[in-house]
Length: 161
Image (cartoon, rainbow, N blue to C red; front, side):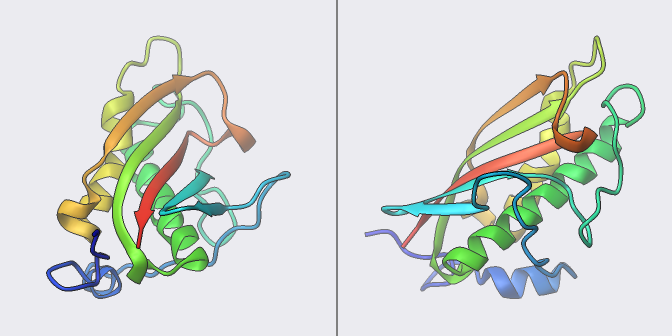
């Protein structure tokens, strides 16, 4: 049987977020015909999260042109926090067992090949908050465009109890 993160021997995600000085934002309403997250069995599938802060994108543009890889990694971190908020709003972080898979999409300028370093922003946030349960399989994909001109988008599959 799988043990939730906040269960015996697990990490208390809420306490760790507070320790890191982070708060979960309100989930941004969907931009089209979908829901932020859906549960099927023991898994939560989180729709692609943009780096919204207070309902706005802090930056737009292509990584490797208008946006540096470091700035994009910070934005990927915000996407990860937004993904945790979507999980929390659906089932509560107390039921989270493990982040299973992360897919990061990076709006890339021609010739930019640093997508893995950008998506590390999200991966590192999951590790910082969830410890070993935050380690996951991952894809980092370069794309020509993303919604609203955002530089990065992150989707997540998580196991829950």
